[in-house]
Image (cartoon, rainbow, N blue to C red):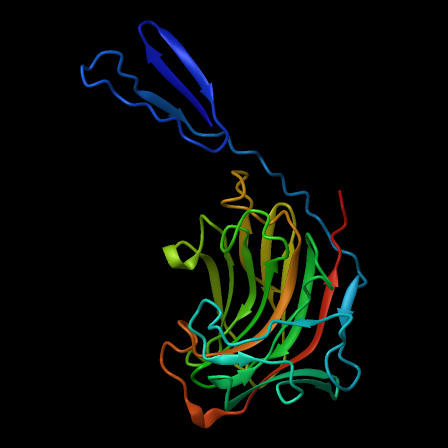
Length: 293
């Protein structure tokens, strides 16, 4: 950022990287400096109309039986509320997560364990599949009922710009059971996130979101994050070229699949204990590399 200060017929020019010069006025009123702030010139980011490879670079078709492959998946475990006052304990128990019949199934159960009232699973590809740019497709059928909060999303692996939301978040699919069939795509950054009511988000009604499988997809390029439900564009957030506070999406991210219970959003209208167990079913997860231009 550039600052120009006019004083006694000449100009002082100072350069600062991401900070603001502090000028204190004398009590006598002499030698007062009034900074003129010139905002940084945004970098022009050109959409090169990137495409993606036709064959997945990484995928899990769930064509096996047992626990998810440990070569592809890891777990976030515990019951800390996860920053959202969620009510579940995440486990790696076969009663909460298993693969069979061509599907990955995450099951949320009403049971007391380690001080939490529900159990579920949160799968991650962290340090198994971490990517910068590309297309990710997940075909899934969602749970239903008040209190459920399934998500297909992405987080930064290295948090290069700092803790959440500074290093970004991409929500490919979110759904809260009390608002049946309304499915959401969002991004969060330091400049744009929900706690300051600036989040970039879009929603679409999918009439059978919990009774049929649908395709949830992100196309992520240096120019934009674009979201698609059943291959229909529902969301676009373009790179404004003003730095990481708006666009932290130039670092590697990983995929998360989870079924939360309750929480600030999922439990906003309470939790219906009569609905359990609830299942979040995934047919496949596929990652396609972006073709460089």
